[in-house]
Image (tube, rainbow, N blue to C red; front, side, top):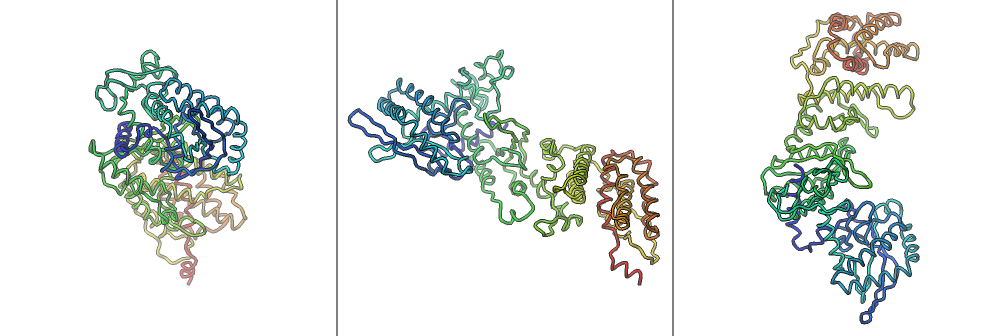
Length: 623
């Protein structure tokens, strides 16, 4: 499970933090994904004569916070509604944050100090309260003015804290013993106390290390995906005090769990085409911190090169390709999730466990290298006015499976078979939507030609992975061609070669026939466009909602229309070809779904112009 893998990462982290004080293990980086951010510091002067302490507000200034100094501000996230654990907090509303500090947090701090041995700090923060009583409105005004000096982008990642000047020396929250105690207590005892109840076990087995421990926490998981605040999700007749029986975690494992969770969130939180996921490594050999460190370095040292940025491949694909180049000394758990922006609770959408680098290599390196060689994809797309090859990217799945992305990701990674009916339905749904948009919208709509190429590439990819069934024994044997030199505008040799190069795509004679009908209609539409300036026959295609009966009517009507506009002698060979592969296989059309039939027709329609004879070749025939 990912929990044990997370704890192993936490233990690895703890080994490198032996010089830190215990409370520092629970201090959090306010914006862990940023290299640096700004903290507004409320600066107070402290004067002390004997036991008398006087604190006055001086001003505010800006501190740059980074990985090196964030601990001194002693930030730790609190409950969604109760404010953070100390005075250090994220700044998004000046009134709200100062009210929380003044009305809630300071009285709680003084209450803790009243029963502690920190008498000097009790006097200190009592004097601090006196200062706030006298100057809270002045502080609000100056803080608001400072906050408004920055643009919204900076404001979205900004914090506020306090700094005291004592005898010319700076003193931050992390320098106070009571603050250290509060953070340590929140980090440890908070694992047994939540929702106003205490859930703690005694002398029982830890669910992680499987050792009997004197004390066990009931709320020890740092990942917020265990909703124990709702009835029906807790054992012991809905008694939250008994939640420790669901998931007993000893203090040692709980600390390692939190440290591992922090590292994963800060360093191994990735995006896969807009989807959040954690990439959690797990070594093949147990208790192997060296191998774990090697795996983590592979994941964290990957850099998206300038060459990668200039290609059509995404950073997501680059990461997956790089993982595929690693040795099978570790596996990866991929935890896809959605996070509640308010509570930060995560909803697991997909969990892929123990995926080896060799599987990444197959999916992102080996198979793409095979399918990308196809000549059909050469110079098929235009990026910044430059022709580039169409290559496989996992984004193709999102293009066609946007509403079931997690399901298709699971099937592909785990090598589970995919329903052809579902696949062709998804493809045709996109083609029809784009077709309808092109007739009613002035905005960007992907050309059907490009969508067909993408579909062809995706089908090719899935066939190479053996995730969809197809006839691997299909052998296209074209009929003999008429070698008599006549004026021909259709190149049968090109068509034969194309089908031969795509036997895995066609894989049955009747699919060649359906494709040929699509070509026939394209020829007709081209003739109509040249003769009439529009394509009235397009209405007969029913928005690409086709079935065997409709397709037969389209075929017959297209033949009739072509004979009206132009003598068909220039297409005699193609007409014979279509008769052989379509007419003689009409009884087999019911073997495939209407969506698959529609795709082969649309493919012929969009690719049909490829088989027109070049003008130079036609001139040679005439001579």
